[in-house]
Image 1 (cartoon, rainbow, N blue to C red):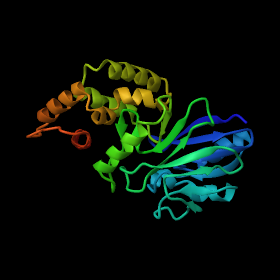
Image 2 (cartoon, helix red, strand yellow):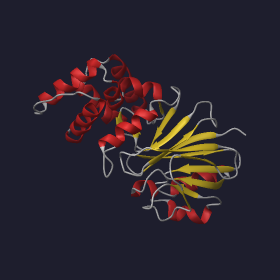
Image 3 (cartoon, one colour):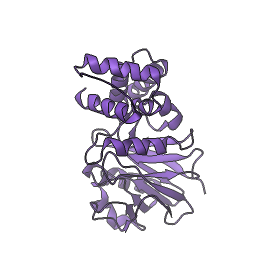
Length: 267
């Protein structure tokens, strides 16, 4: 049975991801209930499962009002989400309720120490990663109670996923992230091209997402840190010195990632 992917904007910049067949819908990180309830009502759908990436309010705020409509489970991997009905330990694999869709729950720590993502390899034309606040297009999530080393390990694993994997993150931060990337390396052709595409889409009121893993490997500053791309490391070093950093010495992907994230916090 074919599945349809939808993106539901809410709050200032949140996205709720929802996919469905002709009968059931599955929702990822419902920040608010109203967009979900409106959509499933309009489409005549039954709410099956809710998948949660982490405990922050703008990812779980809609759960309580969705529970009366839920016929399946609230799935996640955190002791900090009391509304979970199935609290799993990542990495693991599960089948969504009322379907044959297999989902890999991946440990993607960094933004928080217990953040997870959901990789769906076979339900759509391309694999898709529902990654919450782990990967943003041209960026990564701010570090709360995770750390840089966790993030490097997470990105290293996620970069091994198929190149055509769709990156379905939870916020529309792409323009701001590209502004930062171009402040560091203004001559990078792929980033400049993508920046123009994103500005055109946003001017028409369209989301910049989903991205693809192939694209992110080209333009995402933190993935460029992990590959230790020479031009990027040089540009990052020069940018750090211009921003007042002293004794800048990038010897490893962790050094590059840590510096890149630090400078973004100050940008």
